[in-house]
Amino acid sequence: MGAVVLLAWIPLRQRPGIGTVLNILVIGVAADLGLSVMAPPGFLAGRIVLLVGGIVLNGLAGALYVGAHLGPGPRDGLWVALTRRYHLSIRLVRTVIELTVLGIGWLMGGVVGVGTVLYALSIGHLNQFFLSRVEVRPGEEQAAQPLVDTMG
Image (tube, rainbow, N blue to C red):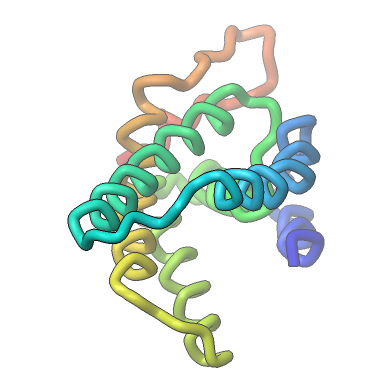
């Protein structure tokens, strides 16, 4: 699926980088490793803390690697390109993308729970919040456009 999303980058003139390749190769392995060493908490409060903490940390992690300008992952590259090209806010574009993916997944028979909806509605806001604080500001000699200029 990542390759299909990468094709959408072509008309948007989004270029892959080392971060793109590493995202494709590392995310699944890291998720599997993390799940193999963590036991699910038995109490609802513990599950809520992990859910909220995971979403917030995912927002920070996404801002860190996108803000480094080393190449976003496939879906991240889509929102990066759309925010730059159309001068839209990150929170708007990311939320629309996530809700679209959520809807398609649900129509295909996927499970949509509270966490899925919470993630879809909050990750764009979190990416925008953190990116404005961690983005590497490129100098004039570099080609990368800062994303914070599009955060209306």
